[in-house]
Image (cartoon, helix red, strand yellow):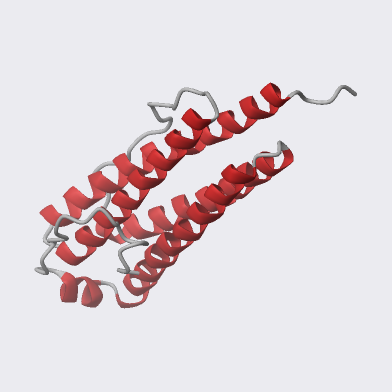
Length: 178
Protein backbone atom coordinates (compact mmCIF):
# COMPACT_ATOMS: atom_id res chain seq x y z
CA UNK A 1 0.00 0.00 0.00
CA UNK A 2 1.55 3.32 -1.03
CA UNK A 3 2.23 5.82 1.73
CA UNK A 4 0.32 9.11 1.71
CA UNK A 5 2.29 12.13 0.59
CA UNK A 6 2.58 15.25 2.70
CA UNK A 7 0.18 16.97 0.30
CA UNK A 8 -2.39 14.16 0.71
CA UNK A 9 -2.10 14.38 4.49
CA UNK A 10 -2.55 18.17 4.40
CA UNK A 11 -5.61 17.84 2.17
CA UNK A 12 -7.20 15.46 4.66
CA UNK A 13 -6.53 17.85 7.55
CA UNK A 14 -7.91 20.79 5.54
CA UNK A 15 -11.01 18.74 4.73
CA UNK A 16 -11.89 18.07 8.37
CA UNK A 17 -10.96 21.60 9.46
CA UNK A 18 -13.34 22.98 6.84
CA UNK A 19 -16.09 20.58 7.90
CA UNK A 20 -15.59 21.80 11.47
CA UNK A 21 -15.66 25.43 10.29
CA UNK A 22 -18.96 24.79 8.48
CA UNK A 23 -20.37 23.28 11.69
CA UNK A 24 -19.32 26.38 13.62
CA UNK A 25 -20.91 28.68 11.04
CA UNK A 26 -24.18 26.76 11.42
CA UNK A 27 -23.97 27.00 15.22
CA UNK A 28 -23.39 30.77 15.01
CA UNK A 29 -26.54 31.26 12.95
CA UNK A 30 -28.57 28.90 15.15
CA UNK A 31 -27.48 30.46 18.44
CA UNK A 32 -27.88 34.04 17.26
CA UNK A 33 -31.40 33.25 16.08
CA UNK A 34 -32.14 31.80 19.51
CA UNK A 35 -30.55 34.80 21.19
CA UNK A 36 -32.85 37.19 19.33
CA UNK A 37 -35.92 35.10 20.09
CA UNK A 38 -35.10 34.63 23.77
CA UNK A 39 -34.44 38.34 24.14
CA UNK A 40 -37.70 39.16 22.34
CA UNK A 41 -39.56 36.87 24.76
CA UNK A 42 -37.98 38.71 27.71
CA UNK A 43 -35.64 35.90 28.81
CA UNK A 44 -32.67 38.25 28.90
CA UNK A 45 -30.36 36.16 31.07
CA UNK A 46 -30.73 33.15 28.79
CA UNK A 47 -30.46 35.32 25.67
CA UNK A 48 -27.23 36.90 26.91
CA UNK A 49 -25.59 33.54 27.62
CA UNK A 50 -26.61 32.12 24.23
CA UNK A 51 -25.14 35.24 22.58
CA UNK A 52 -21.83 34.68 24.40
CA UNK A 53 -21.79 31.07 23.26
CA UNK A 54 -22.36 32.26 19.67
CA UNK A 55 -19.33 34.53 20.11
CA UNK A 56 -17.30 31.49 21.21
CA UNK A 57 -18.43 29.72 18.04
CA UNK A 58 -17.29 32.74 16.02
CA UNK A 59 -13.83 32.43 17.57
CA UNK A 60 -13.81 28.71 16.76
CA UNK A 61 -14.81 29.36 13.14
CA UNK A 62 -12.01 31.92 12.84
CA UNK A 63 -9.44 29.59 14.41
CA UNK A 64 -10.37 26.81 11.97
CA UNK A 65 -10.14 29.27 9.05
CA UNK A 66 -6.71 30.47 10.16
CA UNK A 67 -5.45 26.90 10.41
CA UNK A 68 -6.83 26.06 6.96
CA UNK A 69 -4.97 29.08 5.56
CA UNK A 70 -1.76 28.00 7.32
CA UNK A 71 -2.07 24.66 5.56
CA UNK A 72 -2.54 26.34 2.17
CA UNK A 73 -6.30 25.79 1.86
CA UNK A 74 -9.31 28.01 1.38
CA UNK A 75 -11.65 28.28 4.39
CA UNK A 76 -15.24 27.13 4.00
CA UNK A 77 -17.73 30.00 3.89
CA UNK A 78 -21.06 28.19 4.07
CA UNK A 79 -22.75 25.64 6.25
CA UNK A 80 -25.03 22.69 5.73
CA UNK A 81 -28.19 22.21 7.64
CA UNK A 82 -31.07 24.45 8.51
CA UNK A 83 -31.45 27.00 11.27
CA UNK A 84 -34.41 26.02 13.43
CA UNK A 85 -36.41 29.19 13.93
CA UNK A 86 -39.14 30.05 16.40
CA UNK A 87 -38.30 27.26 18.85
CA UNK A 88 -40.23 27.28 22.12
CA UNK A 89 -37.97 28.13 25.06
CA UNK A 90 -38.78 24.68 26.50
CA UNK A 91 -37.03 22.96 23.56
CA UNK A 92 -34.10 25.29 22.81
CA UNK A 93 -31.73 23.95 25.43
CA UNK A 94 -32.32 20.25 24.80
CA UNK A 95 -31.82 20.98 21.09
CA UNK A 96 -28.59 22.87 21.79
CA UNK A 97 -27.19 20.27 24.18
CA UNK A 98 -27.74 17.63 21.48
CA UNK A 99 -26.04 19.88 18.92
CA UNK A 100 -23.03 20.34 21.21
CA UNK A 101 -22.88 16.63 22.08
CA UNK A 102 -22.84 15.75 18.37
CA UNK A 103 -20.16 18.39 17.76
CA UNK A 104 -17.93 16.95 20.50
CA UNK A 105 -18.27 13.48 19.00
CA UNK A 106 -17.49 14.65 15.46
CA UNK A 107 -14.57 16.83 16.58
CA UNK A 108 -13.03 13.90 18.41
CA UNK A 109 -13.12 11.98 15.13
CA UNK A 110 -11.63 14.97 13.28
CA UNK A 111 -8.89 15.16 15.93
CA UNK A 112 -8.01 11.51 15.23
CA UNK A 113 -7.93 12.23 11.48
CA UNK A 114 -5.47 15.07 12.07
CA UNK A 115 -3.36 12.90 14.37
CA UNK A 116 -3.34 10.07 11.80
CA UNK A 117 -2.17 12.57 9.19
CA UNK A 118 0.63 14.00 11.31
CA UNK A 119 -0.93 17.40 12.04
CA UNK A 120 -0.26 17.93 15.74
CA UNK A 121 -1.10 21.65 15.59
CA UNK A 122 -4.64 20.90 14.39
CA UNK A 123 -4.89 18.18 17.06
CA UNK A 124 -4.16 20.82 19.72
CA UNK A 125 -6.70 23.17 18.15
CA UNK A 126 -9.38 20.49 18.26
CA UNK A 127 -8.48 19.64 21.88
CA UNK A 128 -8.94 23.28 22.92
CA UNK A 129 -12.20 23.69 21.04
CA UNK A 130 -13.59 20.37 22.30
CA UNK A 131 -12.97 21.59 25.86
CA UNK A 132 -14.99 24.75 25.12
CA UNK A 133 -17.77 22.80 23.40
CA UNK A 134 -17.99 20.68 26.56
CA UNK A 135 -18.53 23.86 28.60
CA UNK A 136 -21.34 24.82 26.19
CA UNK A 137 -22.86 21.35 26.44
CA UNK A 138 -22.77 21.46 30.24
CA UNK A 139 -24.51 24.84 30.29
CA UNK A 140 -27.23 23.87 27.81
CA UNK A 141 -27.80 20.54 29.54
CA UNK A 142 -28.01 22.21 32.94
CA UNK A 143 -30.57 24.78 31.78
CA UNK A 144 -32.55 22.05 30.04
CA UNK A 145 -32.58 20.01 33.24
CA UNK A 146 -33.90 23.02 35.19
CA UNK A 147 -36.61 23.60 32.61
CA UNK A 148 -37.59 19.92 32.64
CA UNK A 149 -37.72 19.68 36.45
CA UNK A 150 -39.02 23.13 37.37
CA UNK A 151 -40.79 24.23 34.17
CA UNK A 152 -42.62 27.54 34.35
CA UNK A 153 -41.33 28.29 37.85
CA UNK A 154 -37.74 28.36 36.56
CA UNK A 155 -38.69 30.35 33.45
CA UNK A 156 -40.70 32.85 35.50
CA UNK A 157 -37.62 33.59 37.61
CA UNK A 158 -35.64 34.44 34.48
CA UNK A 159 -38.37 36.42 32.72
CA UNK A 160 -37.61 40.11 32.73
CA UNK A 161 -33.87 39.75 33.32
CA UNK A 162 -31.52 41.98 31.31
CA UNK A 163 -29.79 40.57 28.23
CA UNK A 164 -26.93 43.04 28.12
CA UNK A 165 -23.67 41.22 27.66
CA UNK A 166 -21.59 44.28 26.91
CA UNK A 167 -19.00 44.31 24.18
CA UNK A 168 -16.69 41.47 25.01
CA UNK A 169 -14.49 39.63 22.56
CA UNK A 170 -14.08 36.78 25.01
CA UNK A 171 -17.38 34.92 24.73
CA UNK A 172 -18.86 32.42 27.15
CA UNK A 173 -16.15 29.79 27.76
CA UNK A 174 -13.20 32.20 27.78
CA UNK A 175 -15.02 35.08 29.50
CA UNK A 176 -15.70 32.99 32.57
CA UNK A 177 -19.51 33.06 32.42
CA UNK A 178 -19.54 29.28 32.69
